Image 1: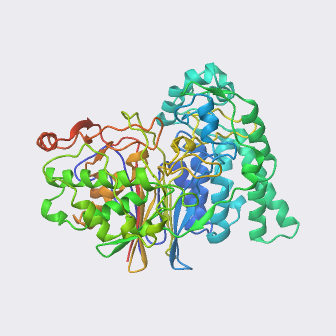
Image 2: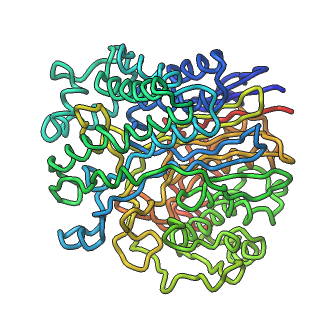
Image 3: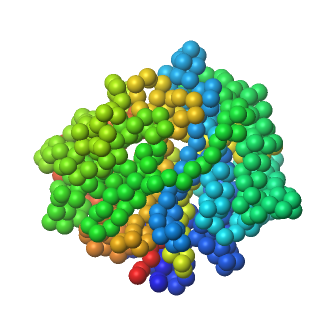
Length: 580
């Protein structure tokens, strides 16, 4: 078996930015070299892809704090060589039991804000990483957390991207969030590139979890019981208590104009569990493509594959105006369905069979005008194509639409090992720009609950204990049941738009992996963002500057509102592929 890993950045030289990295036993692709070092150390120590993946998630929570944190989320796909199947790890947050639409409306909120403590749900990362270790790992929590603890305790030299996040939040640190200022502005100043930065409180938090595991083993617990003790220490012990104490007593200003403390209570933590679930999937030209369920945006990629498989893409030729127009119009249709139909399956029926059926896709594809760009948001009716049409929710409607704001980035963790295990995670949330540091713990809570609506009758309406539909999305591909590829990219609402273009570049257009990563991309902001303030730009097509001018002019003539963008900077694509 040959394993290859790739990561694309914005700098493009010829037909590739860098050489393809090949290995015989394992490979990984991540967003930071310190994170990669942690993963390789774990693989060399006898860990498998899941151990390495978990260790790198924890390390990324330290060194990629602008993109993800220990208080955030980590939806993950795993191929288990032992079980010979793909599983989805539901590492999503859940809303506080005190979080009701009426609570926000009574206080004058139009939307759930994107910052402060109000959009915080229960942190998902600790539960998810423990669950993955319990079910699929070979090492203990103390072993996989060692690298993250060393980085937090001993520090690491900060880079320009990290400092960009600090500078963006500097005023808020100084004027509103003194605990964040104490940590990120040592000596009252912004560090310089190359200065060593430490997070001793986070190191202590992680060490406390390691000690909980060690104490359980000393009492005679087996490996599974010791890992369960790690979960309980976070969610049913002093860490949850400290989070709830701090957010309950600390009022924070938010971008909706409020000044409120948080809503989380200890019972929210005690009830929380990460879960293993069946992923959603479709077959496309001989490959099975897997995504997490409709609590993520992931199924839009599957729907778009269904829409596009009826077209002969190679005859249109790669990145011609005809191809790009078809691609953009199919994205609009898939994301319109996401906006109306996706939600937490525990709270609303999501018609999986209907949404992914070829018959429904054919009906939807017929809406595409090959000569004109649509300006409408056009969700479909998948229920006649579903196994349970009687489960249609009553009066399901769309939320309000307004012009779109900017997106956030995140990071990614992709690993494959010699046994054929594969790990594909997109950790995010809990970053330091949108919420204050909890000083005793060195972590930040996520703000993912901004992705709920306050409007009754919407699939994504806020409810206690409900999951928001997150933007986070990873991909995993098998061929005839054998693992082949894990990939994904950051980029908020753009994640699956970029991932799909990479996949089609390889499967339909026969590109090598690095060439497929480096090819210029388009994306649309036609549909409402999952992020506050839930805005949209009808018919907006974002086109990278590296496209020839005649391509962009052709798209304009078709009715697209073209915006020329710099290459997808900061949003790195990460791919690991197994060659049979």
